[in-house]
Image (cartoon, rainbow, N blue to C red; front, top):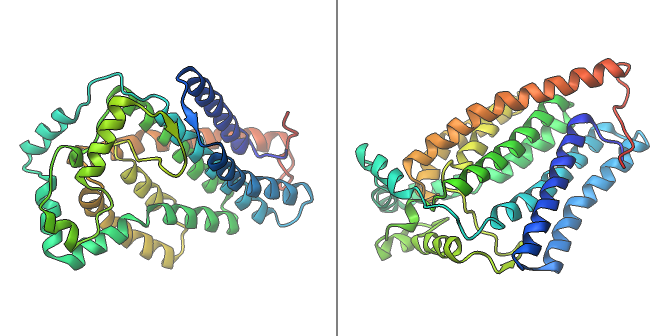
Length: 315
């Protein structure tokens, strides 16, 4: 394979995650949806292979970069979601009580803010739509950065998301949380007034999963486990920082992510403290990612002539 330095690093991380996942799945005798994961892996491997083909034959290097990045993005997402699940059941006491006490000190109540949004259905529905744009935003940014030749920025984007996800999962393993949604109820009319991305029932399902563990893994029933730090906020900050420098993207993604804060609170079922956790996580991870990308870029540049492919035949 002909991979750039950051791509090699990302592939190594994916490989290590896959090995770790496999060992724990075997040790815990967890059943796996082989067909489902085979399809998911094919979705990730196909663009990666096509991207490598284009790069090997020196055809459209920007398309090769986009395809390779897309494949790595999908593959990491698959193994990172499994990585989160193989630590179940939880081994440590949830910290939700502490977070709810912090929320109470500042007068924050998840049921109150959701009920308020439901009294204005257009607001609650708009926040639902905004909340659901998180992953599409990242995909658009990945594609645009790749096709506009912002390779270094794209690699920093990918590495930031990768490190951020791993840090968030590891923190959650030691300090598990299920979010405000798991500890409250909502009036029945709320769910009829606005669409809800998560509900108290969803939260209690997470709690049951945390207590009993996962006996069966399938890409079709993976739930979002992490409450603190809010990875939705982490991804929103990624969108803002890495937005392509074009007025349309800056304006559109800027507006969406101004609205993402209330959207995460209403639709994500989070404690208010989760938001600050997501911001803190990004503040730590982003400079680290920038430093790694800068160092690897310098290493590659010192060993190759300008404009020449940074390629290696991977074992």
